Length: 201
Image 1 (cartoon, one colour):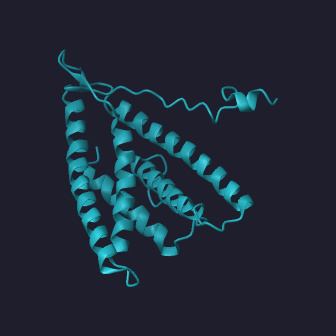
Image 2: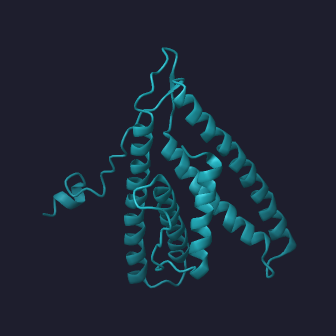
């Protein structure tokens, strides 16, 4: 079972690899064995990283409306890919913990380990890009100072989430917290559930 430190390292690897070319059309070259949990972590962060930059692009004030619509479609697909990948990660945790006997006093957690990792992945992107802001040569001293304060808060949050993840895994392993998964069941991407889609058939 990977620790929070291991997961953060893989997220950072993905972010660094993406920024070699810094292009949303760069194909993912996942260095981890297909089917491994490391593979899923890298893929998850790559999806997040590409989407981060798509969200930047779509906010250009002079963007062509047709291009904006294409990017919006990409973001929609990215959100679904992100959800699917997180749920595959939860499948891994369910398999790892299937033999755990929960104590009568075991409490349920509001999010699964994989959804906590989802937040940790995005946090690593926030840290990367906020650090970039602190290193800008074309920004004012006030901008740099404000971004440094935000970066300090993000780094503190990183430490807290590191502890939260490791504690959650330990508590599930010891039967003190229950591993329970509810699928997202997003309706707007399903042609049989979205009335704007199934009424147009």
